[in-house]
Image (tube, rainbow, N blue to C red):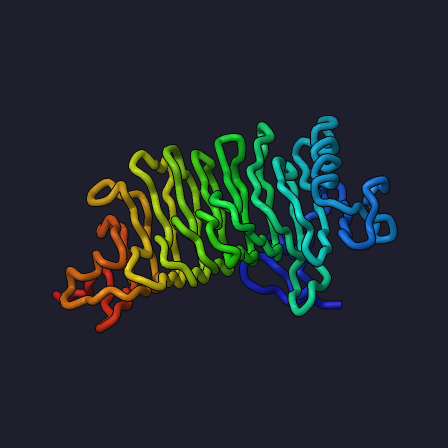
Length: 307
């Protein structure tokens, strides 16, 4: 049986594909079925799945920490659910969380709630094909702090239609974040993705579709830093009013975001080249081949000059 490779390391079966063309099978595999499972099971097979993702996280973290034979391995959790309601305070360490099965017309399982992992030394949790649904609470759907590093969201959905949600993702001093190929939509009050004071080292925001809110698209606060480059590439970011699609508050010569090949849209009137500042507030020296689209005209940022 052949496996067709798709972008971002996902196969046609929803399995993560790595350099050797195989699933990462170095660690233990757990199964969660929120309809059929039981947290009294060991979760090691589809015939005896766990019920909750929280229980799978506990078992995963015990397994990864049990000894030297696990420290350099990655586990896998296969998640099945219509929508599990949960407030996650821990993510599974060194683990791929892969959404499989069916949720109505969706091919992603849903997790409804707001999540702030505080487990110390949480490294490299990778969520693949999971639908994160916010509830009407004035907090981010996912809040990351310095206790987490290398968190990734690949092919996921962030749903803020419940309203009053502040962000899809808010990261403060949580380096090596990857948000790739995700659909982010709804009534976010502050930003789709926001960064707090601290290091965003190695962050990549790529190939995402962000839409539906009159908010800021991506925002840094003053004091956000990057000891490695932070890349924002090939995203389509739309805001419903005239808010900024990118607000790099460490702007001018010190802005930290590399903006490459993005498409930015809002309702601002762009009467001249300088009008792009009504759509993005970047370090222009770190911009390559971006298009800003306003109410009256579109423009390339930076402007292409022929010598």
